[in-house]
Image (cartoon, rainbow, N blue to C red; front, side, top):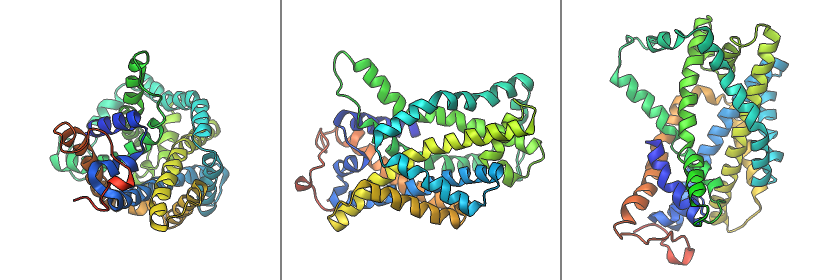
Length: 347
């Protein structure tokens, strides 16, 4: 479902060079209507920013004994100078860190499967603390789907990079389509494997006598994973923290960049002023810090439950315009985002 909703959005964003806000305008939300969706999207980015920065703060506490409140500040503010220089620096950092990140991401699973092939079978039989047995349960499946679908708005961040795709030509059309597919809806392929891998690491953490609360913390997950790779506790801890910090920096650069664009779009229409994207990067970071200090993890289920409903409604409405209205001639073939040609609210 996430792949299918991301496919048309990615294609049109890359073809016309538009971000999610302009695609939303063209999908019939109208000028003011798309302003509201920009606010929803911006809110989603700082919630994700806060979650990811909190994970990094836990890692800093574990290794450097940095108090959480200070770790929250460091984890959020370190992103600001990296993002203020724009997508060029972000892309360069992502490319430099990608090989080591991929290696550390895969390393624990290689050792886990090699040392204990039966762990996957044990995971499949693990019923958790839900009170249900290990057989398939439709209610539990639906609950998991509801949480998973909250990832649908991630396509908005993918689009923020896809809009810089070069123009499609006869010579590059294969690479162009492959790039759109991999960087657009294809993100969920790796995302799906990471979620399944996270379940395996959490199970290993539980087998290592960690509590359920500890086992859902990504830092503890990878500590359990790297325990299968290295034997010295100091090395395990250092590699775990290093990997977590790289991961959170990579993902939060994207969150901060996308959030700054969404806040800029929203406030530019409310105030008719453009103070600059850097202002909104800092604004996004400040809100994220506030959420972390309020312990956002405790409200994770409620927050994702609310935003998954709102965000899915928004994204699928855009998809419906692209895959139904346009082919049927109910909306223009191109993406109409010019202010003078739009209603304030769609009619």
